[in-house]
Image (tube, helix red, strand yellow):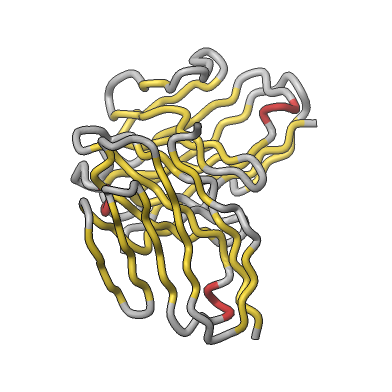
Length: 111
Length: 117
């Protein structure tokens, strides 16, 4: 079993739709959870950062962490064509600097 | 926001040659930089952690003698792929940690695409 699993997609939605992206993980020691957005042929950029369980909202983006289920989600409201990218979940143990990335989900928002 | 640059953005080389990739933090000092490799439609795989003034820490399975890392200053880390082969063709991405061990301050470069013929 991989440490972090993510549905690779591709996921295609119409503009304005609510998008749900998810990751599951196996390491219960993970404490920090991140979502990155990566446009084609570019480096990842940090979207959301969450510590432990709970929700965090930033504009159209909401990150949820459920440590009991080892499951994290990213919701995108009112999706825009500019949201078309690959979304990578990532996580880190409390005392570690090593970040483990999921394989990424490719999202296309159709105008 | 903080900017990390990489040079070159892409490189094509012949098998057996060596290629150097630079990673620079442009407006902050980075004591720690990371080097990742990403194959098409796959996630980033950490290759090594580079600390200024000390030897890099390599992940299991990454050949130290093949992927030479030098972090000579607080703003520059280099990755040299020695005796490159076609299987080394990949997207190499660096990131720099800005002043904190919290992930919030890890900034990624734009990546370098390497094609070995």
